[in-house]
Amino acid sequence: MDKKLLVFGHKSPDTDSIASSIAMAFLQTKLGNSAEPRRLGNISKETEYALNHFKIGVPELLTSVSEDDNIILVDHNEFDQSVDNVQNSHIYMVVDHHRISNFQTTDPLYYYAEPVGCTCTILYKLFELNHIMIPADVAGLMLSAIISDTLLFKSPTCTKLDITTAERLAQISNTDINTYGLAMLKAGTDLSSFSEEELLDLDAKLVTIGNTVKAKIAQVNTADINDVMSRKDKLEKVMQNGINSLNLDLSVLLITDIINSNSQVIVLGSRSDLIEKSYSVKLENNTAFLKGIVSRKKQVIPILTANV
Amino acid sequence: MDKKLLVFGHKSPDTDSIASSIAMAFLQTKLGNSAEPRRLGNISKETEYALNHFKIGVPELLTSVSEDDNIILVDHNEFDQSVDNVQNSHIYMVVDHHRISNFQTTDPLYYYAEPVGCTCTILYKLFELNHIMIPADVAGLMLSAIISDTLLFKSPTCTKLDITTAERLAQISNTDINTYGLAMLKAGTDLSSFSEEELLDLDAKLVTIGNTVKAKIAQVNTADINDVMSRKDKLEKVMQNGINSLNLDLSVLLITDIINSNSQVIVLGSRSDLIEKSYSVKLENNTAFLKGIVSRKKQVIPILTANV
Image (cartoon, rainbow over all chains, first blue to last red; front, side, top):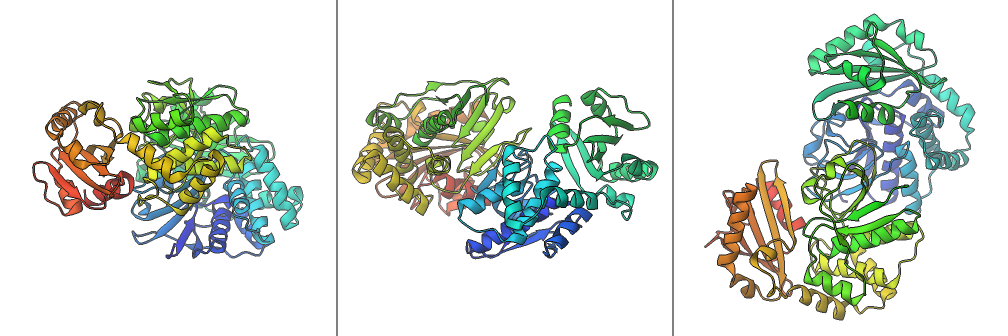
């Protein structure tokens, strides 16, 4: 690969999208390629905490790519979650842990996906496969991504491999998983400085469910659901604006209590019935409590898809 | 994985599709899963030669799957090259070396793809990764697939990794690559017993080029192009029937000279101009000579896509 590879995760980047970009760019550089991490949006307070803790800089913002760009997608594959014009660039590699959808290439490519809790768990394997040592700071950031995606191993997306990988990364980075992990997750739940617009874009995905329902599913983590619910009226106004401007059939905000592993949802749009049907709940004032639901990937998107 | 996994390659199976299915089913069984290889059509004379040589049985035919089936796709991912109803089954894993297109899942999955010449080259890596020994007969069959897909390392799809993997598999199976390889390829070029219908389905792919041009691109290998061209009138009749029944915009037969690495093409359909434009040739009586063109994947599909 003569040209520079740009490495990035999904829009509204979470800690895994940022950590995977940095770790993959490092790996490619060690393999003799020129590679740089990028981000497709503002980082969260959780990610900021992790980057500060391990003294790693924030990747540059990327807003669009051209057909001359060689890119590596990490932590996503769906074009509508990716950078503008991604379909016209040259996709050199994908490393991901999500379903495959709205994705296609003209040429054969490297594609590694596994149904594990975190992209960084797969990246750890690629470092091992290629016999490349992971420096302590990068290892700490990769550990942060696993803690974030698995909510300290409590999410149903968490696999044994995520846990054993996190333990190895904790050794390399000399980190106490529980102490550091709780502090990092807590840093991510300080939502007071965000506007409602920002809250709804902290970790949001646009998905088309069953080829028909255009939906935006946003998620915020909190230690206190009531704290976020006190802003419900303003949040609903912003969600309604999004429905109008993006022509959505469904807009969902998952407010996830990371201590007790439940979510409160706010739901708007002509297909709000899909949430009621999927979880056998009745929305009252556009909201419902979803007991035990914490994972958009494992407990929301496939359930909505099955009920559409 | 409690349920049985069905493992299969693409329709009109070539040696790689059959060998990958058998090798992957063996690997999964060693990993503690219940898995069986299947085939989606008749095997070629080349594949028959390889199976006989290494004393391995022909996999059972599979014509359709249901939503209760757990499947592994090897050597393909596009749904229109796969078994009927594939989109409703549960896709557990894909191992492939083609572009990704017309493919989607509801859930996260294992997906390993690399831009190498043969699926068996990737499978060899998976055996190594999992520390599973490859028995001599399976190794011989995997070697056959690499020889077949790379035309004894002469195809532009062939990578260094295909060659080093073939050399390792030759050691394990105690096979002389050149002697065996030429004999196997030659066995595949004896086309005399096939009807024109069969010739056009020996190794055929349905593809949609640039989302608009519905095309069937068939390929036969021969040691003597004239031998196949003497059947041109009858081949054209069958191709025209296929255009009518499948509503194709383009039907192409690549007649590939495996000794000299060139192809003669027969081209029918309303978008025949795409071949003329792509290779700067003029079709005369629906045919043209394409110097140095031997790979449908690397020298035909992407070139047509770029020129559509």
